[in-house]
Image (cartoon, rainbow, N blue to C red; front, side, top):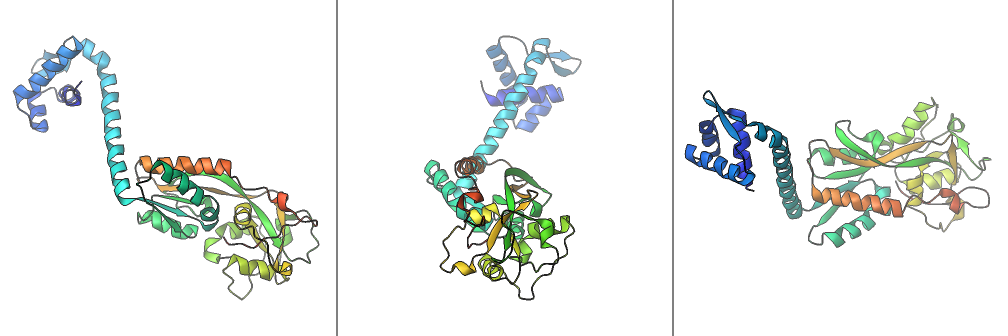
Amino acid sequence: MDINKLKAFVAVCNTGSYTKVAKSFGYTHAGISYMIKSLEDEVGFSLLEKKGTSRIPTANARKILPDILNVLDSMERLEHSIALGRSSMAAGLNIAAIESASIKWIPLTISRFSAEHPDVPVNVFTGDPFQINGWLRDDDADVGLTVRSWTDPDYSWTPLIQDRFYGLLPKSDPHQHSVSVQDFEDKYIFIPNPYGNRDITNLLDKYDISYQVPNDNTISMMSVNTNVAVGRGYSISTGLMIDSNRVVAEIPELQPKILPIEPETYREIGLSRKKNAGRSPLVDDFIRCLKQVIQEYPIKPIELEASDSGSINFLGVL
């Protein structure tokens, strides 16, 4: 069944006129009339009847009109998806992600996606949530794997995981199994990448914790760890940050004590996109691969690598 015949029929139903439809479609009056007659021959009954000077759908036509509209809508969405797919294949797929996710999940996802789409290049932009917002806004990225608390409220959001907070304590701190947010009261708090860690400051502010920030502008997570380990202050990290950066430190004295924060507190990791970005089959496939990877390689329980003292040793980045 010719889709153009269906479009012509719906247009006549909407306008009541062969002449108006002919002008809109770029056909003659006779051409539209022929298309309708041909469609009637296919379905086996009359579709239009005269009412005064207008053409209106017959009783039988009204019964199938909703199905015809659904077919046309599906075809329009299919054509749009095909166009997006062709465009994406030409330009490649641009993914923005926070660094901890880039280390743990993005390489595996790209490998899986590329096995399905070997001709589609994948570009990865790694940065903090603020940068990811900008890349999405400027259309430099198709989708962002980021933190909800930083995501632009005008973007769509798909939650993926809950990422638990952990306290980073000096090795001399007496806590052994867990630490509360209140235990950070009046402490020096090293905040890695201050402009990209609203999660930490939001957590402290939520519990109305008074704290001080050391004068030295510590940016790197590794520098935060070593400063905390030797007793210069405290900090906060998350399970994903820790799990993405488990290494054996050469100098044990420079590893901080890491304990879970009680009550359990999390940040949400998920996917951010511009609401008007439209559907892209390639983006959908990448997201499907990412969800599979996260399910197969979840954040490893921190307790599995606990030392005899109940704390965890690691060096890492955001």
